Structure formats: structure tokens, C-alpha cells
Length: 367
Ligand code: 13P
Ligand code: SF4
Image (cartoon, rainbow, N blue to C red; front, top):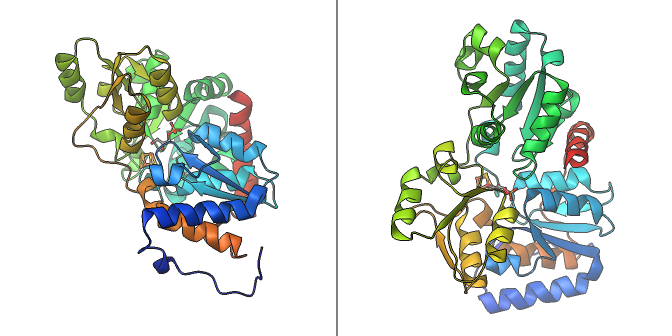
């Protein structure tokens, strides 16, 4: 690396560059960094970004890679904020995690704030011995402080690929689960496990007792936080009906963040990695309607030309926050690093890190 005295390169200088220039400069800077840098890319990232990734995958796979490949001092995380935080929590202390655009958040993660979760816990405490009866389970699509809350209260994190195993783990320990922030992942998983509807309640953080009676809270085995993904909630059962009518042989495959009315009509449900693997392994000529983020589906279409791959809706857009990571931001972060400047360093405070790691480690042991 060059001198640390130089001035960081400015992002605005990268916006006018052509796609070809950005590709060549990013690749050259990455080559110069050699094995000091690892680029992780989530399955929803744009092509112009994912082509530079050393590894791509779903949230669980990327979290595992961050934990296992800690020998590289720098990780450029092409994904959203909570994923980069998870990498920082799981990586060795000397490893530096960089998110090319700090504004790459997640609308679902923003639907649960620590103050609201604390308040919910206190409300539950007034009704039952909460620490003995409720396990908090947080979807990794959440701020680090919420993962820390779970670590501290005997809880655990989960991803879309291990939610069932995590819920089984939690119910084996305590009678109830507080599942946040995605109502749909929790409900879809519990539906498949056969939990009766009258044992699930929804907790609206803006209402006293989450909008529930004391009896309903006492009876519930699953308390679902009222939160959702703004992308996946756009898929409708009518979209499934439309494709079934158009193509009698179609298979519908969706992400578990979709509403249960969509999931219940689908043939298969699973994480982004599950979706990619399933469609890729399917026989030539098969038809698939895919209900998840647009970039993933478009890439699947291009990479599987012997199959008929359709996006489940004509109105759903890509994840706007994932989309913020683009070629200029990646090139800017990579060239700065090659020049000795760390931009957009993700740092989870030590206290949160310690408890959050406990919740993540419990999940890793279950997965
Ligand atoms: P996966 O863990 O399935 O990749 O999902 C992450 C996500 O944010 C889906 O919207
Ligand atoms: Fe968050 Fe939804 Fe985007 Fe996934 S697709 S990162 S849940 S906003």
C-alpha cells in the first residue's frame, strides 16, 4: 500500500467514469491488494458489482465466510448494512469491514428499534416471567444492537435458511418466542411446523401490549413483530394464479419474506441460495416463476438459458438499498484501500459486539 498521508479519493470523481473504466480500475486495484482483501457479494447485488466478488451467497453463507476467512485483513462487503455489521461481529478483531455505500440499509431492519424492543420486553415482563418463558429470536436483517439484545436475554439470531432449526432450538428451551423484525418469515416457518393460528399473535410496537389482550399473550407460543420487507410484500397471490394459468407446467419458488398467502400457493420456499441452487439444478426446459429480488432473477434467467425463468411480478422493483452499491462506489472504496485509505469502515461497538456474537454463535451451532 502507498503512503497513508495522501488525501482520500473523492466519490464524485467516479460517477462520470464509463462502465469499462470502472471495471478495469476496480480489477486493477483489487489485483494490487492481492490477498489482503476479500470481496463478499450478496445474491441481490448488481452484475457490475457481483463480478468482482470472491464469494457470493445468501446471508448465512456470507456470515459463515466472514467468520471462516478471517485471515484477510480487509473485507469489502457488497450487500446491506446489517450484513456488513454481521461480518464485523464474526470476523477477527484485526479485520476491517468496508461497506461501499453507508446508505445501503434495509427497510425491514429499520422496523424494529432497540427502544421499541426494550419496551415490548418490559410489557411482557408485566404479564409473565419473561426471562424464563420467552426466547427472543432476531432475523439477521436487523441492527447489531438487536442481536446483542438477543445474546443478553438467552436468545439467538436466524436467517431465512435456518429459521426452522432456530425456532425448534428456541422452543426446546422456553415455551414462547418473540420473533422480530419480520412477521412473515416467522409466520411462514411456524405454519410449516404446524403451529395453530390461535397460538400466534402479532406485536404492533405502536400499540399498548402490542395490540393484544393479556389472555392472548399468555396463550401465544409465537409473538410476531409487525415488520416486513418492502420488496417481498409486493408479491401477491394473484401473481401466482396468473403464472399457473399461463403455463400449466410452471413451478413457483419464493422467498419466505413473502406474505403467507403467496407462500402457501408456491411450490417451493427458501433463501436466495436455495432458490438459485434449485432452479440451476432443475432439468432443461422446466419453467419457473421466481418471487424474490429482481437482480437475482434476471441473473438466473441469463445463467439458465435452457430453462424458462420468469419474475413473479411485473410491478415489483429491485431492492433499492442493495442497489445503492454500484460500480462507482465499489471502485471508489477499492482504489482508496489500495491507496491506504479505509472509507466507510463498519464498526460495531465492543459491548454490542460481544453479546451479538453470542447470539450469532448460537445460530451457527444450530445451522
Ligand atoms: P437471504 O438470506 O435469503 O439471502 O435473504 C436476505 C434478504 O435480505 C432477503 O430479502
Ligand atoms: Fe431488506 Fe427486503 Fe432489501 Fe432484503 S430485499 S435487504 S429484507 S429491504
